[in-house]
Image (cartoon, rainbow, N blue to C red; front, side):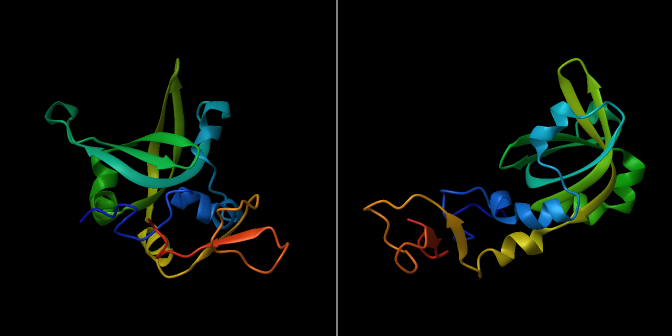
Length: 160
């Protein structure tokens, strides 16, 4: 089953990971944009929506996944032995957290997975909880809290 923005009733104004970033950062999960600034061989943790999974017949059982957060994408390599251990997380996660070793060859950056954590429950929780954002007030803002608060609420059902 695929969970698009419409299916999980999120606003298209914010990426779901943006809504979770503070908590993820407190847990040591870095935005994917920082991977390009991170030293080769460093152990890092990233999380993102799983946008692709590939297991090419010529790759000897290696799985390649692409994760997307609010800052960019991360290319993940899952070796066959790790896949055996994290089969469910690899195949079923919509929001996946990966800890592994950053490998850089020229401009190409991969994260060789060491540990996988399914965080789909956090994504699904966004359906149930309206999120608050600091934004500029505009005349077209329909859902504002208190005059002058500078916060706008985008209830999940205000998808359209």
